[in-house]
Image (cartoon, rainbow, N blue to C red):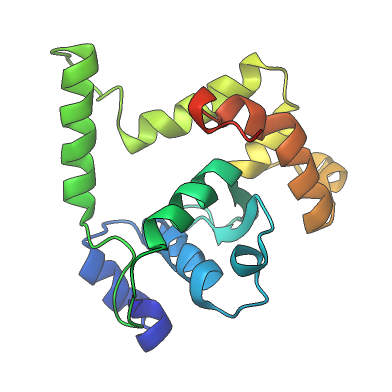
Length: 184
């Protein structure tokens, strides 16, 4: 894991081919969750995993979560791999990710004009849509997405991480988890 080894955010951003430091921060948070120490959420089995992020675009700090099914898939992926400190979990550039999403979109949506319906940005929009459609508190959705909240509303989201985790588990995770990954 490169950040774990170098602690150089710009080096990791360049290595991964990210244009946006926020993409790199998601990677760094995930890396820290996986490799920080054996008492962390990943190793203890706490799910969903809390990610403390800051949006570069706005400078807004917020938390969001790496869902239970995604943690399960990551653990399955890592089970037979011996990663060295300098080795990324997934060695893929942002360009390759966008190409994969475009190929997936063409497979399922055919030829399309305009924005790729399967782009990372579209998935972010889908996050909001799924939660809104299932009546999750709009304030929570805005917070989990790292959007600016009016000061008077910000006072209503002052919760502990465990409280946020429980809220996410009860109100969001159910709607964001594909049926084949639902925990039994």
